[in-house]
Image (cartoon, rainbow, N blue to C red; front, side):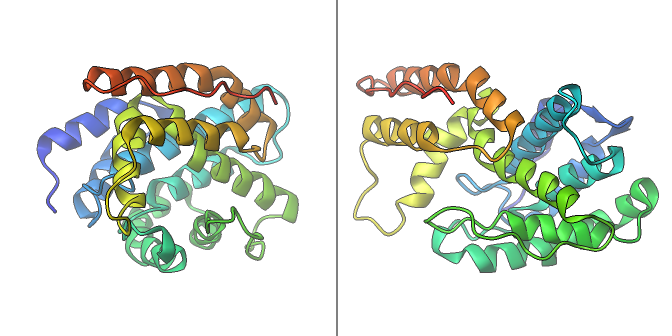
Length: 255
């Protein structure tokens, strides 16, 4: 599917963030223009930008709390990995490994000019590859981390990978992810069902899923406490605005 100029303007407006003095809108535009799954129901460019934005928020909170063990270039590498982690996604949850392989094969070459001009780290591509592999999420949850890439200690890689894992899930709580989460993900996860679940049941189940998640990082737990209740209410309001019954919304557990 093609990506329209209007969509590109929306993505650019949503990002509007400088990271380590670097503005990322031109790179996001390039990724969006070349992403075969740019208009997928959920695993689209909107989702990748939302994960990158969430990772950036978590990284800044980690730094402010005095918890970080990675530097400013490491943080940029995490955000760049987020921007391609679901590139060319098949929209099928039973194809997690092929999806990751496609993301690396198609997304990493788009980052190479940016890596050469802004990152200038010989191991950056290998680090981004390992981080994208770390987002592997089969139905039973995250698996073991891949081997630590060159240029990072095990502790540094673990921090970077766990931030990205948290961001991948928690990005659903951002306001700009609302329609993606309520409508798009429901479509993708219902592909093998006779019909999608009722919207109110889907939203209730989605709230339960997020309430039962245990974030990998202190910043992830902070983000959940700050945003979960508001996001759950917004999801419910969206369902009501579509003329459907209000779902039974679960209350987020304290963590």
